[in-house]
Image (cartoon, rainbow, N blue to C red; front, side, top):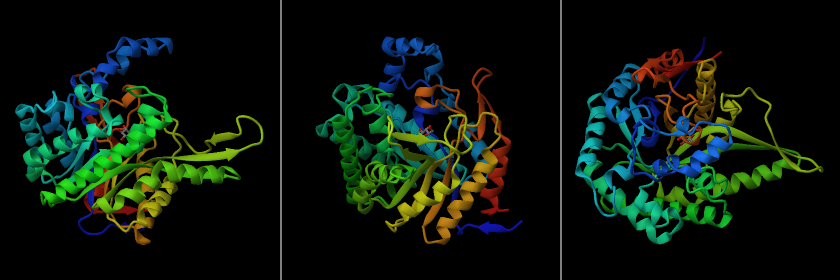
Length: 406
Ligand code: BGC
């Protein structure tokens, strides 16, 4: 079988986030929400058991990170993306917890000891309770708190950090929390969505300037959720507009303040238009993941080409699928990497790929049913980790820095 090689020094790894794997992140707005009576009622109304939707002990990675990193190392991964939980290190406004800062020093050191590069996200959806209570990302005046927290992270942990991702998916956070209302604080307001998006953009730029002012050498960027927008007939116009507002307008404004662009790619949205209500439809016609997301590897190529226009280094900060039986993951990885390679051979400067996720984890508002892990986590059996077959396949790619194609 022919082989396609990747450039020397290409980074291969996986990604996680604090709230989704650590467990007991009791100082977050998410914790308050998932334990609230309002959320429980909402779930019971849908005939669901609220207990299945609480992060609880998650994967217990707060205590088991050494074991997790041993696994990543055994799978030949040389970079790892994870997030620092702001609510842990600043549990009250302006009060930083040295114990938790020390914890993250140990986490970073554990990666370094294994020769794995550290890719640190500062904000991955969750906020400290106090920050949410003063209006969170809705208020421009609150952004100073995020900047202060970022500075603290740089000063205390900067020597162990190789890459910084300021904010994970401002477009997903603002739309899920303020437009569809599916995540806390469950608002449905277009104007708030816009404000939050703008405030995140501002926060990213300010943190970028701060890092440069303090002369940190780590590359700093943002992770943008990139959708392959496509359309049939008049749906093409809708796709164009959606692409602009959802992802392009943001990148157009931040790329000058980013050393790299992080791409999280999962899905396509295919729009079709008809003259009968509801006029606009979203069509699905490809094989689906457990989450009912279309598997569309070619879309990876299109979003990379979109990002390529900024002429910046690109890191794939997330790409993966929910596949509890591990039926499609191997092929998914192979085909996505093939299309990524195509984009690279046409000039897109991709320098690393981090699969989502290392572990099965809390899939946010969906509980634990959706399994994105290269490694299965048996939460009922002492959190036992079990390496999936697809992870072994991916490990060979990481080792050989190449993929075999048909
Ligand atoms: C998020 C992850 C999430 C994944 C799968 C991404 O948008 O960054 O936190 O688990 O999608 O839904």
